[in-house]
Structure formats: C-alpha cells, structure tokens
Image (cartoon, rainbow, N blue to C red; front, side, top):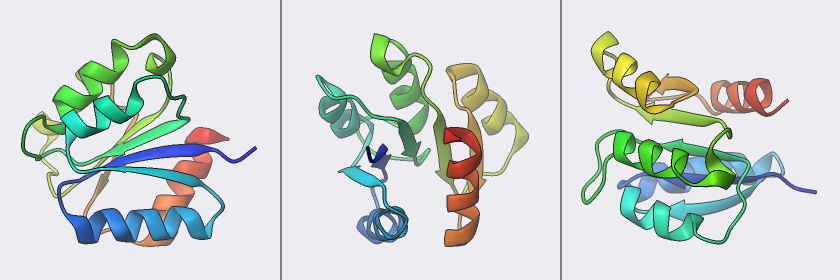
Amino acid sequence: MEKVILTADDSASVRQMVSYTLKQHGYDVIEAADGKDALTKLEGRKVDMIITDLNMPNLDGIGLIRGARALPPCRFIPIIMLTTESQDSKKQEGKAAGATGWIVKPFQPEQLIAVIKRVLG
C-alpha cells in the first residue's frame, strides 16, 4: 500500500515541486496551503508523514506540529520541517514541538527522498 504524505506550504510552487517529487517515487500526496488547512485535511485521515514549511499564514509549521501531535493517529508519525529557516533556535523550537527532522530550502529532490526513505523505512 502506498504511503500517504501530507505537505503544507503557503507557496504553490513549492507544494507542486514537493508533490511532484513524492509522486514520482510512488507516494500519495495530500497538499495543504497552510497549517490550518493541513489540520483540517488530517481529520479522519491516516497519513504516514507530514512535511511542513515553518512560516505560513493562519497557522505556522510549529502550530501545525503541535496540533498534529495532539491527534492520536499523528502522535508518532514523522514530521519534517522544510523551510528557509536554518537558525538553531528555530530548529530547537521545532524539535520541542515534535518535529522529526529539518531540511533547509532550496532542497534537492534526491535529498528529500533520501530523508523520507530514512524516516519511513
């Protein structure tokens, strides 16, 4: 069965690139425009992983991680931050909220797939 990955980013071009990369490697993708949209799309759905931007309107990536971790089906799934932010303080904040990993944009598609394969097994 295909793994389902939810990707949240307010940039349509980044969402398209991430989605295209994941679909090329056999993953099902659910796209969300921000953290609030992502939490709505998580309701009643099982996903295997979340990839989220940090800076988004309505609800940022940290808020999305906290919200997702509060949902029993998402308590232990991998959540990767895909963001332009690279400061250690932001990484610590992400980790404290429950992020599994961190990828800094711009990213290479191979790098993204390598991280996904590592954390999803």
